[in-house]
Length: 444
Image (cartoon, rainbow, N blue to C red):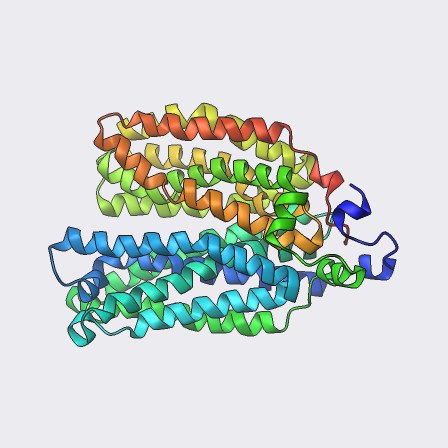
């Protein structure tokens, strides 16, 4: 790709393009970039985990199912806000800097969690209560949408060429850790509090925890070094990032990210978020057993991320991604069918873990590969926007589609749907260039 295409001046001084970060700077950058993911995803999933306890306070009319549906509708609206957050924060990160965008994202999540923690109930302020909840959730949706692109871009640019896959994989390590932390807080509160107290006021505790964690991460991020890639783009006089520039200059890369995300996000939500309900509604496990199976499988999945990140540094990220989608397209139908039939918890755990291990070849390096496809001046927007749109369309609807197929009496149709989307992503992955060699992240 030419200098004109990348928007970087070929005469840019080499001391800008090769900053030579110290190991301590690099480690601090990775920890600061990934810590926000833990908080963002903890807060995001805390809403879903504690809906059973707070729904009645905001939607008092109707029976429990109606209350949960109304709370779920607000959850969905927050999901739809993510593409808007990705667009806004992507532009901001490419114009004001990665550090500024990362700090803003976690500040927004802190504000959203704090609003939920102190939000008045319907009994206190009437119809204003669900409106306040909706506004808080929209703020969280904007924050999560912006966090992915900013953190993936920053961590990819700060990781260093030799071990870029390994260090960048910690984005998903902390993402999964956030899910597990929300689940752990729920389990602890269920065991140390009376159910009446948990329903009355205890459900506010996880959101207070989330807000406090966000403050800590904001403090950490305020002392981070700015990305050398962003500084180089600024020094070279590269054009300002715009949505039009992204799609006119980089339509192929945008399409690649959309297709990979469509298959990857659909599989991620089918194998993780929906799986807990699948184990109860289809396999027939108790809620407690399904929760235990899911938590144990997610823990091993988290541990797999650095391993596959390391493998991507050795074998090539295009190969680990192709492995995920090729194997996923083949295994999803028989493995999901086996989980549906088994009554053995250990068998279900093993089968779920198999799917998640396969998925690790994509999730460990997904943000990195996307970042390596774009020049620095439009990188954060390029990573965030196509991802967020595909994630909302396919990841956000994964559970709904699966339940629709089940309702129609043809549950295996959802397995075929996931397999087909992974097969499509596999075809795209086969044509993916080797970003280990041809990365547009030129700084090390």
